[in-house]
Amino acid sequence: MTYTDTERAYLATRSLGRLATVNPAGVPQVRPVGFVLNTDGTVDIGGPALSASLKWRNAETNPHVAFVVDDMTPDEPGAYRPGWGRGVEIRGRAELLTDHEPPFAPEFFSNEVLRIHPERVIGWNLEGHGNIARDVR
Image (cartoon, rainbow, N blue to C red; front, side):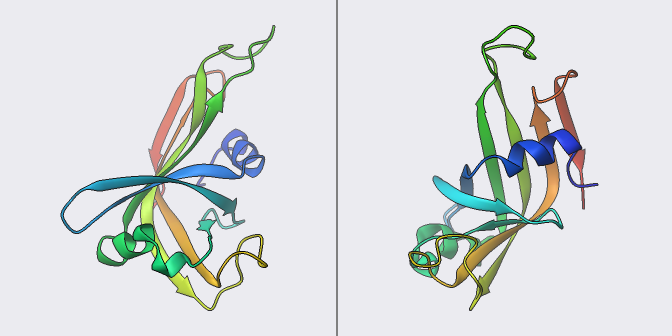
């Protein structure tokens, strides 16, 4: 199981995350990106002219990536840890796909997809027991 039911539901209702890559000199880069969660647990990231982007070039030389989707818990009665941060971090390997249907907005996005294959998943403050971290290879 790649995600808990709660993590999967959370990711399915979000469309913006932060992708971290590392360039050949070892310098990290983080960018906000749109994404789609696939039924097999992989994550597809698209964009306009994606293969011309620094994130794509970084993933070509070092496929290890991290991806975070987060927000604040509802500040309302009965919410789990009201006003706290919550989210899911996915660490894994990037697969670079060309000539592929964009995950969304095909009129604006290129036919290139950066697909993340999860290796480790960390969820926090989504459920009544704080953090859940596990390897999912």
